[in-house]
Length: 122
Image: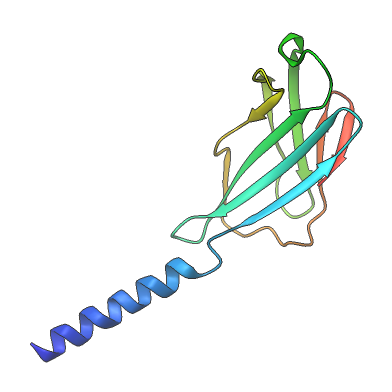
């Protein structure tokens, strides 16, 4: 009985340590003339990175805007993009979880979001 209690205690301790290991992720932010953007990274229980994006239009009448696509590029991961996005009434688009990576993006990464010909350095 004593050995079982020790094993359960060790397993619980290990699970707590693994779940606390840098689980918050990173947020890369940038602004341009017409847009602001954020690349949000979170880490799964298994240590994989999950990326999502939030973009905000700074101009007027965002509901009339049609955005055919945008691209996210970096030297630290394979780039990705989304086509035909719709902004909400406040001019915001949030992608939700888009891509899962095996490695974590370094906080020093240079990330470029290209949107309607405008490049945002995140």
